Image 1 (cartoon, rainbow, N blue to C red):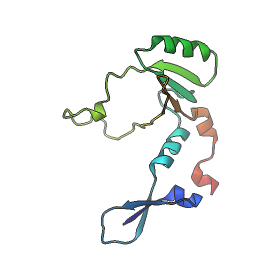
Image 2: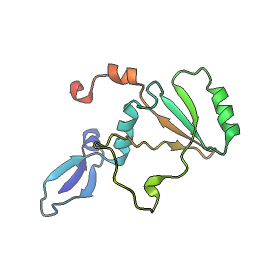
Image 3: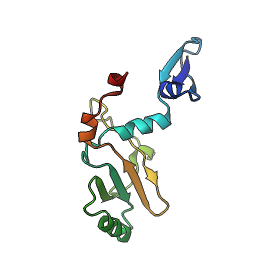
Image 4: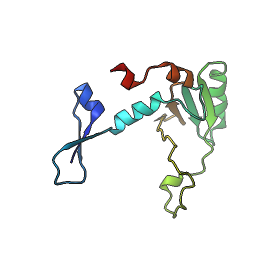
Length: 140
């Protein structure tokens, strides 16, 4: 099957994402490209930070930068500065992983904009704004 990004197609951009099984079926199937997936995730509110629009994650070994950014953004509504508490990325770890305890996959993996200055910015839509906005299906 020929795989097409439905979002790129609606924008009139190149939409071909390759092929997927069954390879002998020439019919198109639609999915979402990485670019539009990232944009879609930005529209969803964070479960951990429901009122945050901009999350700034600072490397744990750069406490001076953390304190500086925390001071600069103090009192700014919708911005939160945190230290990265992860020790390593388990998904890239080569060790075998036990079965996931979750029955339903609910984790939303977002990649942020990494700055060469030592922090990462992740954008969200606050929960209140996401609830007030009409769904994409309702707009059509």
